[in-house]
Amino acid sequence: MTLPLNTILHGDVTERLNSLPENSVDLIFADPPYNLQLEKDLWRPNMTKVDAVDDEWDQFSSFEQYDLFTKAWLTAARRVLKETGTIWVIGSYHNIYRVGTILQDLDYWILNDVLWIKTNPMPNFRGVRFANAHETLLWAQKRKGAKYTFNHFAMKGLNGDKQMRSDWVLPTCTGKERIRTNGVKAHATQKPEALLYRVISSSSKPGDVVLDIFFGSGTTGAVAKKLHRNWIGIERDEGYIEVAQARIDAIDVSEYREDVFLAGVRSTEARIPFGSLLTNGSLSPGERLWFGERSDIHATILANGHVQCGEMVGSIHKVGKALKNAPCNGWEYWYYEENGERKKIDELRKRIRKEMVKELE
Image 1 (cartoon, rainbow, N blue to C red):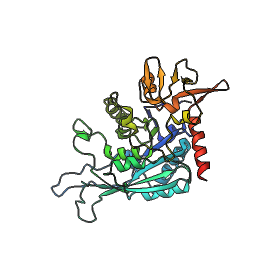
Image 2: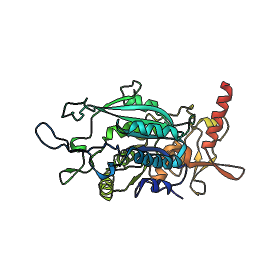
Image 3: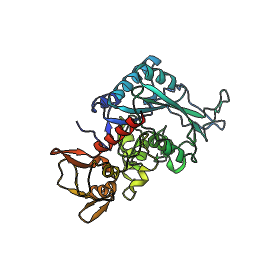
Image 4: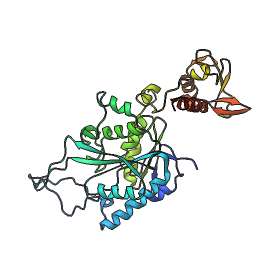
């Protein structure tokens, strides 16, 4: 089964998750119902009604019902997450502790809790509690000890070249960013793009699959598209789907350069330039590379580590981008021949890394 990339799936979250292939998604973002348990209308001191979250999807008859719902979607999410994948779940004090317990009960391993500190929180109009000025994000990996993506340098770049902390001071979604339909909020809990920018930039790479299982107004899909990630959304409300699809369709990234997406995305492993395959004898100048396992398109390796395909000359990434007409990680697209069989050149890079590890041991 192939993944329905860059598509919004309509339906129940657990059923839709169970329809996706196992171990197929790199990153999941979940903004589930918070179970706010609002029983009365909220009023400001000037007697105007607060536009609170009173939607049907946020209403559960008991904590037990909410826990069963949470366990079902977290179990289904774990099945589709790759062994190296991670999940982010956001919530408030109403639900996040229950979600955290269930995450751990299902053998997820929590990597961080991050506080989204709101610069413009809603006041507590009755003056009987502290103003709720933050929400909590839990970041967890599927399996303790597995390799996972964390783009430390990208996060430093977004934080004045200082290590990113776990307290993120960001405004809520207001002004032009807030989507409205006929003057009314299109979604009661629309998250700001700045929040998803950090989530996606920190824990995925260009080309990865980012799945948002409570898609809502499509913030995750919009940011994923801007950051050149593939995305999938799951949403049961057709009205939200219409809003999200229009929002994402309006984004044009055709003019972005490849290095725009790759900036700050560095592997924790040693960087191996393509030229290293020549200097260590894995490949030779004049040898052919094939653009695909069964493609007839080929390029000739030049002595300076570039490749030539027809009139095009450049790096494996640059020439691949021209052939693909889209950003291209050349390590994944170019093949060499060994004993009559085509293999990705990334296999040669992995061999070099193994040798480097042996030398360090």
